[in-house]
Length: 368
Image (cartoon, rainbow, N blue to C red; front, side, top):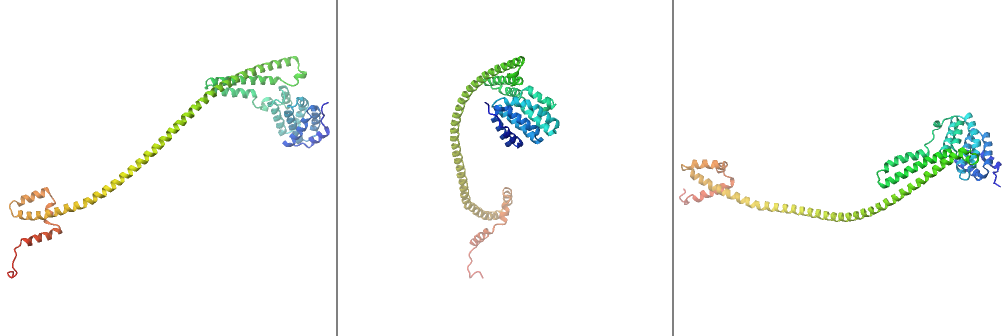
């Protein structure tokens, strides 16, 4: 005999229910524990729903959503039982609720459709109760549409990868086809087909399920081929990686040697330049020291020559040819005549000494 839910205990929990996640998860776990008595759980839930205020009604709808999604892992009993009472609850909320309440219900219906909590016929009945079209609910793209769009976008990207790209493209195409077949089957499937489905409905659903199964088999084969191609490419890339690493090691060693050689040459060049600079400085100082005495000797020689030249010119001035000689000297040495006419101060004592030596000696007693 199936374990039955304690109704009094469940009623107390539902009366204290709030919209917090902790409260909803706690009561949901309690209800799912009695999943074999899904009818008794839903019956108590339905009674409490019409007695509750609006805020708790919304909390009860959130609780139903949590039980539906988590409870289907145990059995399908909650889907069957809640489907019997939810249309009336949704109608009650839609007629007497405000816009916020209607948005909550619409969002829940979207979740049930997207996550396939209920089949297509059930979702359609909820939408009919709400009095809205499918476009106004704005469902998210289906899994098949998303898979098809992803496959189309990815196929263009992998088409340039050669054999691996071809294998991946084929796998993605088969996966998109299987997703579409799966969506088609899901739209026609409902738990009620196993208990009260007509021959036509069961036959149509069986045909779609067969197509879905075939598409899945083709997807599996295509993905196996893609895996094999990827493994082969992986082995090739591993070999290329080892080769590149070996070459990088060799090149790094060569670069290190060249770096050392470059540092050595740079150091030697800097040392050579410094040595040359010191040599130029030393040679320049020695040349200047040697040039001093030499310049003084040249100057003294010139001075002596100037004195002799002055005497010679004086003697030549008394001869008739003196003007010609003086003219030639002025032409060849423009500054020489000035030097003769104005001898430097150092030459005057020399001339006086020469005149004194040339003058006759006069006895002292005769000078008077």
